[in-house]
Image (cartoon, rainbow, N blue to C red; front, side):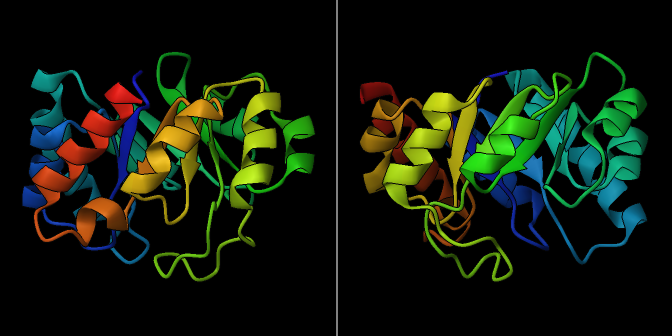
Length: 200
């Protein structure tokens, strides 16, 4: 599991955009789509898994356990209100990844042993997820990451200019949506993030 450049897809993402992020150096891909039917999402997840496998990049499904299992995805990411992590782990088995979102410092006390990594945020308010928790800011996010028992990625309007500071705070990676999906050239945007992460 390499968390450094973690691409979280926008709703309705096309396979071509994921391919561009992959060419640019994405190290993990999360298929997140709050609007797709399960059957369509399963079909896309299967396609993406075949695309990512030769590069050694894992495919995570957001929230939908049944989709992750049916598609043979490499893992599942859940939020605080998406179900019991222990139950998710039992369904996934021991070999798939399980990620958990952390929105404030108090939630760290309840991270179960069955989780593999944490997504910490949002760093800032984001139009991608208008119902997200209040923005943490760099200082609070850094405190959570330093206290976290697991590798953590920062998420929530993270951009290229944030990379050095987030790496210095101890983040294992950055989880980005719009920094790639809304860029004029998603491949180049991903490459810039990857280059900045390596050099930070």
